[in-house]
Image (cartoon, rainbow, N blue to C red):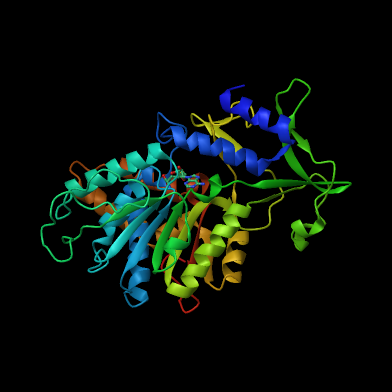
Length: 391
Ligand code: SAH
């Protein structure tokens, strides 16, 4: 057992079994805090790391929503779990097509990992330098600090030059983000949020816990006492024995907060992730390390723990909080509706010699047997909104 495993074992010895959610939170906090997990040399690869067109389409989506809502002023662009900062760089570059969007925009990166914050700062700093008229941005500041260009901006005004965007980092989405309209993006963020698992048995729905076996190593066990029936949605209570119900309280409460803010301030949110769009009864918790499945309990914090996102639960939560939802639709349909094929043709035409590997990358994002169907997109918008682009 590794050091985190020993700490978790001590916790269980001291206070009793912990939920799968608590285990997942402890393991993932350690996992993301210590490493850059992305890419060929890492543990997994995400859509923005596969093709720049993914972030470009999401950027166009944001500016279109902003335009549709009458171009509200003093808005934020918020990203949950920005990884290497690649998606945000592509979004900002694409957003330049809409005059005015970058003016009075604040970018907020919701990221708990110090390692990834640093990489995000570097990615976005390089992006700004490589792309005039953005002056270079200084390295990441501390929590909540606004990150402004180190030198006076080129065109005066209120301390900002044309196209310069202030950035700041926060540890979590919280009420300080609820005082202005925001356009929020979350790609492969919700799957990392902790889930609880309940297994249907002859006794009722029993929670799966993490405990210690006779050798004092971490092991799964079912709670001997069934959970109160009110924890299980009515349409799932009569499932056959052996069924598993997974629920992420963290994901649902985040969807409620985001939807509540959007219902009051305007703006919009786009959640893209792998997940299901009908009530599921299977186990989806998985550990991934070096692009392969790993065991969940053996080396906590050394592999990425994730679970498929329950899009219907997020949609229902957003509606209860007073917003409208669109989708979930498949990632393949969403990206094609936004014009990813045409954009890829443009990119290929602009490169000499033509680089046909761009098709392979985009195919990976949209083909049904690759990421196109498993991954889905869900939009949260104010109730006044009409059907957004892509849906
Ligand atoms: N969106 C990126 C990365 C997805 S990986 C991409 O598409 O490439 C998940 C990201 O969410 C990482 O940046 C991770 O550090 C962050 N993260 C995971 N759990 C978090 C939490 N509870 N709070 C804040 N950030 C979290």
